[in-house]
Image 1 (tube, rainbow, N blue to C red):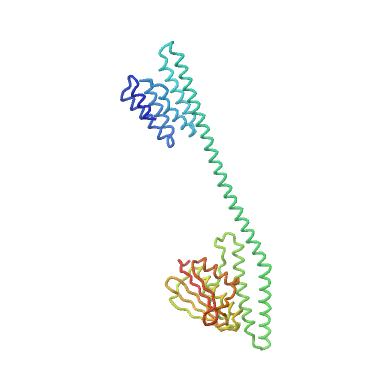
Image 2 (cartoon, rainbow, N blue to C red):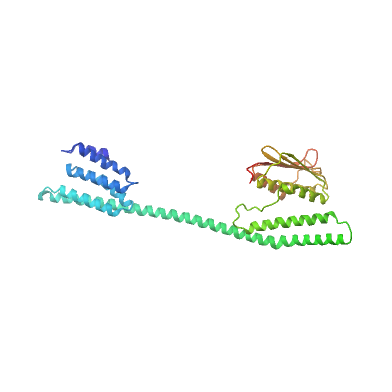
Length: 361
């Protein structure tokens, strides 16, 4: 646009360097239309008015003013745009009225320019309304997404509360009865001076641990503000109790710990305890009274947990993974570790988990 107007003004009789400078300034002011529409409107109108008054280059001198009027209306400055349009049209009409003979043509030219300015104002108004509609639609989309997220969180909280109620009404009641009955049997045996069967003592201890962890789980399920969704479960600090309880059921078990002990992240500590717990449970259920060897190795970058048993597992007929092994794999995979659970070449079964260290929490 600046080049076109410069050529027109350059070939207009009586035009000089000041006129070329005014055309360039008025055209280049349009660069600021988006960030400062009022400044662009003021500069372009003033510069092009100066050109119109001095050399009357014709309708092309209106182009920068039309663009700035459109930008000002789009930005919501309709009054300023109307005022600038009226001043420009009024000056143009006065300049182009040399006498009575040219008044008709001047009025026709001004009427044409008035139509252009009205069109620019209408286009700016439509653009502004369209932009407002798009912003409103985007805001509605954001609000709808937020509403969906809130509804999903609310449904998740309701489901957690339902699960908590079901666990409380079923498992808590059943475990309490088992623990109480076992405790009564232990009490009666001691009153009669009889030796208490180790299995009864193991049931009492296991029932107490189960109740403790179940209560912790129920607290997490009912606490909807908790973000991790995990109960504060046991860690390797309770490994000795776990192994001792396994021994009390008749399972020969040993524990070997190597490496330098260090503080573990909660997730790693919990996963290691659960892996040993599940592995010892599987030995008791499937290995036919075979001995179990638990090894905990604090390596440089990972914690290695291995549980071997001397059962009759056959490498040629590996067992079908149950829920326990699947749970192990999920825990280890969530921590970015590796798990091997398979029969040993020399007989028996081996569970080996390699859990990478993270920052302790």
